[in-house]
Figure 1 (cartoon, rainbow, N blue to C red):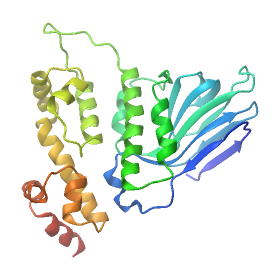
Figure 2 (figure 1 turned 30 degrees about the vertical axis):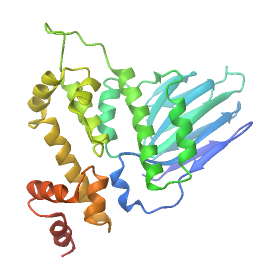
Figure 3 (figure 1 turned 30 degrees about the horizontal axis):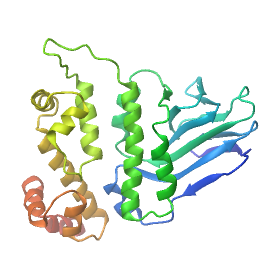
Figure 4 (figure 1 turned 60 degrees about the vertical axis):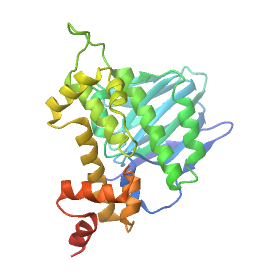
Length: 294
């Protein structure tokens, strides 16, 4: 589908529009989310933007005033604190709301993430919704605007973490209340899906099992049993397999040394990484790379 875009950029005051500098995307698979552009607009009455057929996703957060979003055959008011997550491939239109006295101040992120589909299953369990997150996303959005022009590895990791933080706010806002079982806990499949998403987005960290279980409001013992029931493996095994899968991508798409990849995907030593990689992939990382090249 060709990209369609039409804009009337009616702004006032200070305009912020940051674009990621050109950089080699070969190693970008190491980051769950990659931000292409971000900004803060002070929109006046005639502002609007229409788009369809573009890659990635758009996140809109209203700071003040009011906007109007047309998306998926519906219209949604974008009041202060509201946050919308939009697939840029689908037709969408957003504009200053007619009754907002010509004012709509909002932040926006245009980003990519292969893992987003799992999060969207948690956020949109029914029809599309816009969520009120209050002022919680503001610090993360401000950090994005500061870090995006740098685009070094450390900044890219921080940018990915910022997007993940906002996505998790949406997940929590969309989470329905659960009726507890007789032991005060419940572990529906959606909670395990949320845990999977959390692990995949934080695979390079030294994750603590109790923290992951607490993230989805389950006891550690109950979480381990439920996780293995739905995935067929323990949380630790899932984490290690995820690290090896990312390492495979880096071996295939970059010229990074094996020891560099081992650190990037969360191993404390390259010897442990090589041993673990071979136990899962059947060959060492170097042999895996050579096999792809030959």
